[in-house]
Image (cartoon, rainbow, N blue to C red; front, side, top):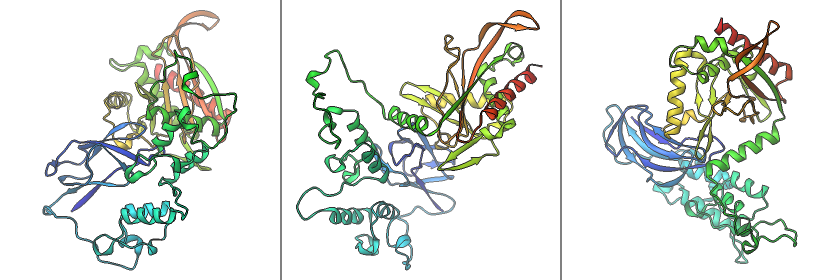
Length: 432
């Protein structure tokens, strides 16, 4: 049996990714779940795993290349299948979409509203290829007056350009066959002096974008692709989700005394978050395109700071684990995040996020922006000794402030408060 290895969608509206390197060669044996390649999106670098046991039969895409999502990167031969020449073509059928055009050609035709019945195929047996669609799009777009035609770009890239009043026909695309990529548009947006000739909106004449008039002490700093992706998501969240905040001070003194050796406070807070979400299931949810979804398991996202930005890898089915099991999984996940060894399924699908800045002792409390499409995020401040009144007396106790940010479109204030109440109750049960 031959299985295709495709470039997955890693979230954040990913349209293409870079194939950094192959970790296996053609003919090498592979096992299901074993890393065979490294790929990079605007969010992270991850390891792509073999989908079955077998032999890496064919590598179809070279390393160091930008590739659209869904492209077949390689084929794995499993079972008793013999080493193959190219796979035989399927028998022709009436459906043009499934047999007379390659999957990439179909996708491109859909993006450009192109009728494949009007395209002549140059592939084997007259099959329509990507190049055939590109030629048809260019021919249709080319005007008779000789001016540049319609630029090749994905729908999401066109929307980004429209939102920023950018004329795509003035951009030299760096994608395959001249496609204008999201990175091309974003690069333009970070260089206002260049963008002045491309952005259609007018600028007041009293404002000059000439580099010669800038402060000579000012130096442009690199703005990573990951940082740009984070910026887009945070703006989206802040604009679309009305945030509601609720803060509680929690007494950790007795619970810290009961922590098993080798399990830190961060592991305890993650565990208590999961337990509280099981009590208040409304917060273990996502809100997507006007639809609210709830989940039977907690897929907990954990904020991890990297030199290039913040990433939130996901602990799937986190509610299945004991405190010790969760601590082990969290340590492994965070370590692999920092080593760029995450799996694609660990980059998306979170149902709630925890962001802990308690490692900075000066941070008593803070608010966090919700990670869409989730409806809540918990911000944890530093745990330290503070004066607390207990039974009419003043005591020194170890406390921490936690702040819940909730999407007020779907979460009422009382639900947010009940979540913090449940969190504290679970904490006291653990301590008792």
